[in-house]
Length: 313
Image 1 (tube, rainbow, N blue to C red):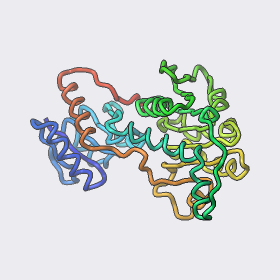
Image 2: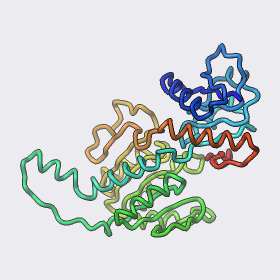
Image 3: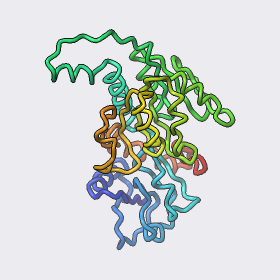
């Protein structure tokens, strides 16, 4: 069996090759280059490689993503329509995402920004006590990562709402689901004061949070986006922050990355920017997950994480 690594980052390529070679000792694991003549059974990358790659790699049984998102792979015109694409499921990212989101929410709700200003002014000024009950959380997207984030908020003591394509039964989480048209989406938004965006980027979620939808959030709500920048309309967010309808935002993902220096997000007083670090792929457990799925496929068994092309995840 052969496994080809085609990651765009040379350092990551080496780390993936080494990790997969340890997990699949009977396999030949190699790194792709344009002069490569070997044909592989499986491949892994974050974005789809070149046309030359697919012209050579004719016998692939599956293509693995190095992340939970697969839009960069599915957008390629070179990716064969019949080739199964498999996304990562957590592999160390869930805990990172949960701590980022809960931390960002608590920093805002517990008035961390105000106390930082007071410190700079040397002002001993206690602020009114905050009740978490006044800050219901809304998690948009209840996949593997979204469920972990929802449970993490519930464990701290928040009221948690979740919105997903189909209903979920999760103890302590109120479930809203799409059920023809918008379903319960407006009710989900109006019940939310901290919106956590965690759904994959698909044609259905592109620009989902525009001015109308963000305006349905409770006044003085807070927005956390750790999904993809394209789910959130930049101009809509800025307008509602400037008007005072939204209190603030923590943004880890953007339509263009790196975020351009001239973008208003950088200097907006109500926005906190981080460089797409809320959940970084941990290669060792991810390689272990990929290896387990490869062994299952080689035994003719079904695996989880196979992307449904029409849904986009």
